Amino acid sequence: MVRIAIVVGSTRPGRRGRQVADWVLKRADGLQGAEFEILDLADFELPLLDEPLPPSLGRYEHEHTKAWARAVEPFDGFVFVTGEYNHSVPGALKNALDYLYAEWNNKAAGFVGYGSAGGVRAVENLRLIAGELQMADVRAQVALPFATEFQDYTTFTPSPAAEEQLETMLEQVVAWAGALKTLRP
Image (tube, rainbow, N blue to C red; front, side, top):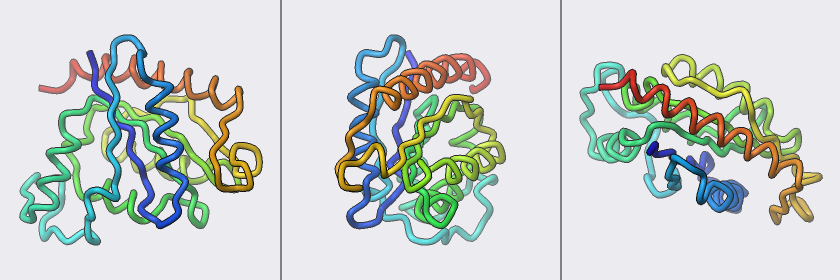
């Protein structure tokens, strides 16, 4: 059994990410060989990166960093739910990723993006970040344009095509998470 965290990557008031993450969790329920859980960045209140040493050393000084590391470490893979802010990822998500290093290594990553262009540019940025953190990103991704997947640009109403994209991506994340588990102590 692998454990996959669905990371809500925005902390902005009025964000759409939690609606999307709840949908991912509901659709993932019952997927063979995996259990899923939501990690909402809003619950961690991480300040801008304030650790004095690089995260690759693993010597965290602040309790908020230690709590974040304890939350991330037990998972075998991640589904990052991200909005697209100015052609990139929300600052809160980039900051949360930058806080840790070893806790991300040799784990699978999948992406669900949303925004005016479906979040595809944010996902492209996340793929680069995931590579640097030694995460293996899967090919399939979910793109949710505001114009077609959100009623009045606010209420998430996923299409059948989005449902299919999600199913494919989740299957890939679970498979890769299982394979990568053998690389970690």
